[in-house]
Length: 130
Image 1 (cartoon, rainbow, N blue to C red):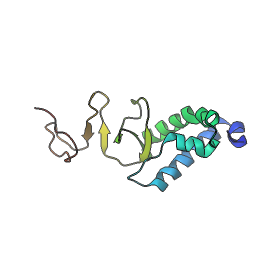
Image 2 (tube, rainbow, N blue to C red):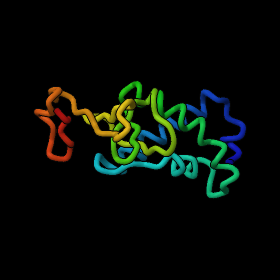
Image 3 (cartoon, rainbow, N blue to C red):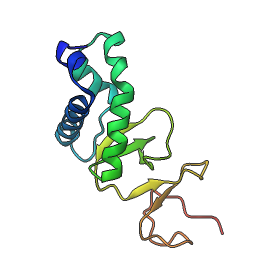
Image 4 (cartoon, helix red, strand yellow):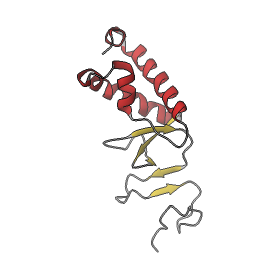
């Protein structure tokens, strides 16, 4: 971990993480995502024992940012609820209208404005069974 990251207080570290996530996601663009480990490596360097220490703080900041609507948290290419996801995730630009349902084992997305019968869904979304 860099000397600055080791001595920074948690609030400053969180602010730095937030700024870095914002810039990396914006730089990557709307059709691409950023891995949280990329953020950690940008702060701590390539020493795995150092950057891994940042993974939980990065996750906490990412969840707060997703709640605020400044980024999206994605799993398997779909935006997920920041309060109800587990495992590996990536960070994307805000404004993705597709949200995977946590209670749906298939992970089928729910699109804003779609009716219960699937009308209004794009071709990439499986219609609901009737």
